[in-house]
Image (cartoon, rainbow, N blue to C red; front, side, top):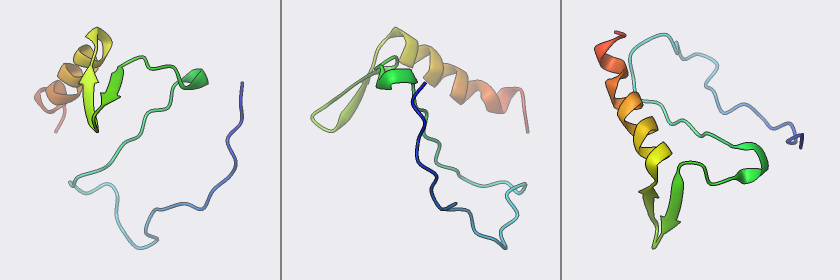
Length: 65
């Protein structure tokens, strides 16, 4: 498995990440496989797996506060 270089944390030292707020999440796949769709003309076009992930992500608020 390819190891990624260590990088500086982008987290703010004095921020309480347990509080409600918006977060940016990046998902990397092994060997950079395009498992969720493709970017075409700067727009993400979801495939079947991407649509499942999108629906699941949006449904999290129905199960968790």
